[in-house]
Image (cartoon, rainbow, N blue to C red; front, side, top):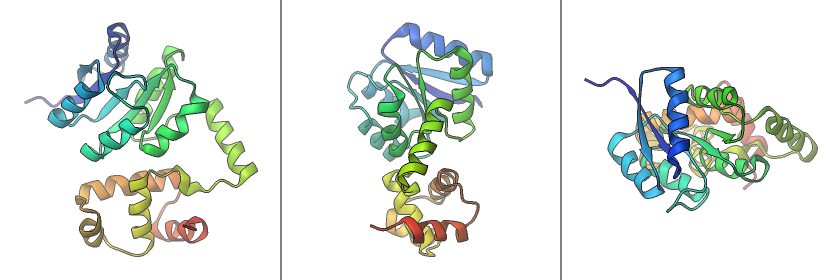
Length: 211
């Protein structure tokens, strides 16, 4: 029986895929690394293997920028996604994070930063560069950005139902989700909004959910 964690490395350059494979082998030998050179191939593997993590290039043949995330999340909402690209973080990161990606790291980053990004997203935590994290905090403090804007569309739907006092059974019926999927969304919502319990979640939604 194969107990290795499944990971998809989605990039159309074989040298990049090999480099990422090497980083995974340095982190841990317990990974089953699958490679995809296009977005359709990524989706094919995703449906068959249900990986724990996808390392995803933005500029992937057959893909369509951040809209790729919606298709990935629809098939496997538990799957963690680390965007690995040469595209500028300041321009593209927010869109991918809001769409459901957990991390965003530039291909030109030092190896130790890329390795840290992989470890962080595997742990279910958000990864962006320290510089971009600082910029996000500055924008939030200066413009009063709504923290709910960090949530993907589905996370916002689940969050609203949780804040309204709906239980898992009702959320399952309304959104056609499995209990384990709801738990995954709840964990991500709590992490992104920096809340520790339902009471704090309700307070955040009462304050910022103006739609």
